[in-house]
Amino acid sequence: MELNYRIAGTGPSVLLIHGGAEDVGMLGAQAEAIAARGFRVIWYDRRGTGGSTRSDWPGGGADQHADDAAGLLRSLDALGAIVLGFSSGAVIALALAARHPEVASQVIAWEPAAIGMLPGGAEMHAAMVAPMDEHLAAHPGDWVGAFHVMLAVISDGQADLDDPAVKLMEANAEAALRDDGPLITTRSFQAGELPGGLVTVAVSGQANALHAEIADRVAELIQEKPLVVAAADHHEVYLSAPEVLADFLAAPREWKL
Image (cartoon, rainbow, N blue to C red; front, side, top):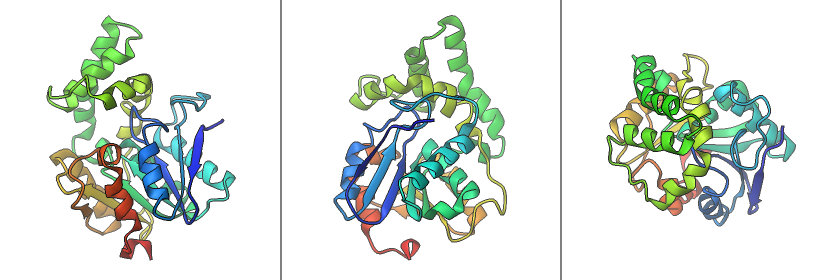
């Protein structure tokens, strides 16, 4: 298994784990912003995405990706890193905390897309993926078209398909639909699975109802309320305003002690 990764900056190590339909290129600005604040930042294409290989993929879901991330930290002499995962990448970060707590000093889950944590989550998930499955049944291999359907579903038809970020995500549509959608986001966590003191759940100042409820459910397991980053005004702030989470990470906060 070979992961395509990049490193910037010097200082304490930070590992970034991208969300669905994202890749190493899309996290570049966020990584550079964090590196500029005194960190050694590592970010990579998850298995099945971008320049990383597709061996034994898909199938292992969040746990497989967590094992990959832990292996990458070990190979780069970055044990004790701060791990920051975004959206479905936050689900992977949580799985890393559960499976490999020894590799991280802190795991920050940014608005984790763990639909499996919700009551009725399986039914909700099935309803969300059905329109994509129907599109692919009618148009085999049209991952971009199915990705557009997915965006319409999760945005209640408000998605801007001409947005430059959406255009970049189209290159990773297959990975999002074969891995994030059916596998990663269905991961749930049980009481005692997430080590106390290791995990922080963080949300934007304007988190939508779904992300807020999932964050609350995860936070209950670690017996801490979600940390609200007031300066963040939407879910994908890490793509559009990288200074917000870079400042958050660099600020002296109790979770870093």
